[in-house]
Amino acid sequence: MTTLRTTRTRLAMLPLAVTVLLATGCGTQGAEDPADAYRRSHPTPTGISTPSTPADFACPGESPEATAPTTAASPASTVPPTDHYAENHGFKDPIQLHGQSRCDGLATVARVKRTLEPLRRRGDFAPDDVRNALTSLGYSAEKVQTYQDGSAGVGFLIDIDASPWCVEGTMSGDSTKANAFGGYPDGTDCEPPSGGH
Picture 1: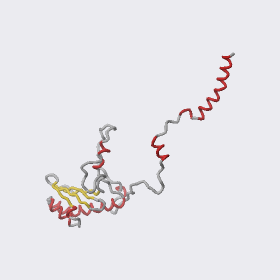
Picture 2: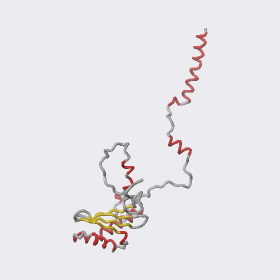
Picture 3: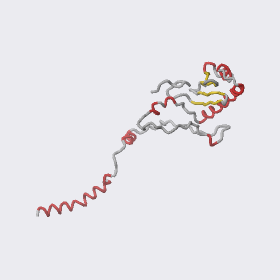
Picture 4: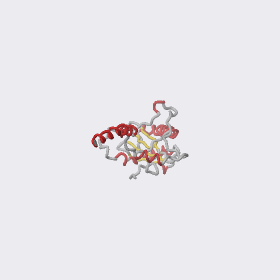
């Protein structure tokens, strides 16, 4: 008789157990992500905005489809995903310009190329002559660097000094190349930093 009473009690509790399991979701919800818990317990105060990248738009003389800054394609990484090489060396990547600063940079690059084109056509790759041409644009002599780049070319770097705003490039028999950028993440000027954080 004790066995029969125990069986009936267990059978009577079965609907209750099923109801409890259904109410708790049968264990389908996993553990909460710690980052979500932190964000919920530490909300962003109102009045503080998170930084965002200004929208790029077509600059004067530029086709609308060319508004995204171009970056050199790099081959697929063969470094295992646990290696933080790119993250640890990000300080070497120049800061891209966006919005109106990008348009100003493109205009400055075009101006530099126009100024250097007569030298390039003459085959004048003397760093001093390139420096004189760039300072004739109004850049301070202390802010213009030129150097021999290979056997038949010259490199240049201009610190525009607009928090920072830089133009660097090379001139060779084939072409003049230049790029405007906003300095380096860990640097204080247009020179690439020698070490990161």
